[in-house]
Image (cartoon, rainbow, N blue to C red; front, side, top):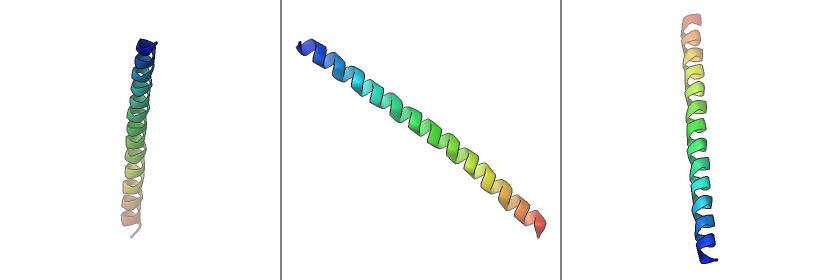
Length: 49
């Protein structure tokens, strides 16, 4: 019974870590896209002037 609980906790921790990694990765992608968009908007703004 104890062994089973340990394994469940292990799996749960690993699962949480995976979710965290996924979130960080997607936040990074989102930031990257936003950054490029803002940069392009700034360039267009500069060209308009």
